[in-house]
Amino acid sequence: MTLVFVITLFSCEGNYKNVQKLNLKDGAPVAVGKNINLKYTDSGKVTVNLLAPVLKDYSNYQFPYQEFPEGIILYFWENDKKSTITADYAIKYEATNLVDLRSNVEIITNDSIVLKAKQLYWDQKNEWLFTDQAYSIQFADGSYNEGAQFDSSQDFTIFLSRKNEGVQFIDKNETTNGN
Image 1: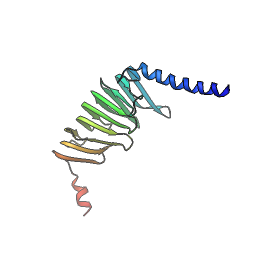
Image 2: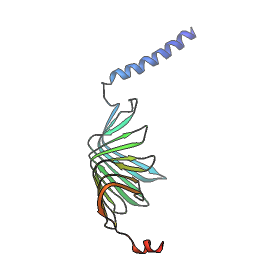
Image 3: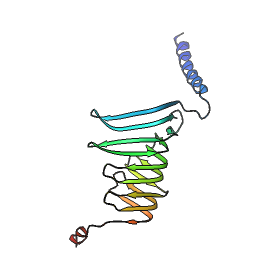
Image 4: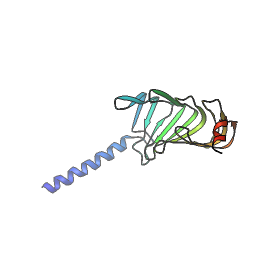
């Protein structure tokens, strides 16, 4: 009798999960949020604030992701200095921690770097930004760069650009002191 009860219990659990899946339409998200205002904290201080009109959660998919079809605004605080990321569309892939930002992407860092791009990928795990689309970047010292592709560290200390034009300011003392 106990064996029959255990088998019935497990078969009901499996059927319940199948019924849950049947309730979702093909391609439907598992959840939809509106007027999202998420705050991430570290030691009681807000470090990231995510704002989005709509969030669609597809964590029920084999390759789970979150979609922000009406855009996203991210505020980051580091040592009480704020950086901002905006885009008209965004998607975050859970398995890879890769964020795909599209259309009117703009980053304004806490040290006045302004980057604009049609599309930008942000590898959160490796703290790396990259794109194969047109972009422009204005650095705090007034130098700028426009090009077709770039790879960069998240803090822009490493910036590798291809097919670009721009103006770079070089400190003459730094170049002559090394020789």
